[in-house]
Image (cartoon, rainbow, N blue to C red; front, side):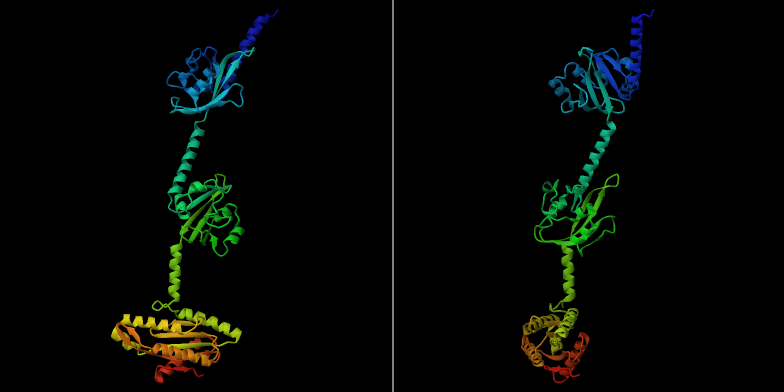
Length: 466
């Protein structure tokens, strides 16, 4: 007859051995203490984690010694005593919270510098062990090594801080938006340019308002949405694909709302990609090119003006004459060209000096401009040569009247370098359509007529004879 008690004891022994093998086979470091705080379980993964064999821990109190340099309770000890709030705050302030999975369990994370390999970050959970009657007879504590995770988080934070430092320290104004079009970076250079502090922009979707008077996407928004059609809509004639970055666009535009007056900006927006290649944001860099634009405008003005007198130069004269001829052809109106060459200018220039001669030319330019209408053009095309284009004169007689006033004005005395001097002028006249169909023929015939006037006694005019 089988001894039931013996079989029961045998089964219990087998179950205990089996349970130990299962616990040791789990990849989860764990230990358990009884209600006297003695270690009753210290599995193989726990040995590897702490570097302390189970034989040095089983049956002893002081599980703390594997984790801390001086005596203090581990979380399992606090679970045995009911996890009093004062004890939790004293030993794990700011690091603990109730377990979401285990009833009456607690979780927390901390760094343990005395563990092998220079210390480890551990996430651990402690929960009570109860007997069949529900009485607490011990506590178990499990661990998860999160050192690699924490290192990765720290690296990510370092990278984020480094990126922020790079962006902030960059002298190029720039801002960054995330996938939701929220501003994540607005560097100091951008603050200075736009006159808007980063605190006002970070986290917002209002990055349009330093640039535009009403809501509209900026270039970074369009790049983020890969909206090439919208780029053409909002920046027509001002944009082009970036030659340096795929998916990026660049443009130039004038922004009248900046502090201190409008500015011309050159700006480039490029997509930002995550590790998996997805677009997760966009960066826009800005460059103030107002000075460059002013310089270009100055060069353009100089290219279209006579530098000495400020009058139109030959290039502008020919452009305006071409336009006037086109308009005259449509309206069946006339155009007159008066070619003016000063008389007795060279002796004055030689005797009084070039500075005096320049002042005389400027004064003559002023008198010529005052003699004609605003719709007419006065140009200096050479040393002492001027051309007046009369747009749509009423008659040949009207043209002759203007030319006679010009001769009279030029003939009036001038005060130059403290001396009173007097010059005259010879004028040749050509008319459209009688004397030519285009600007080249009219200017040529007027020039020829001027020489006829000069040969006939100077200080007079001559109308071209075909």
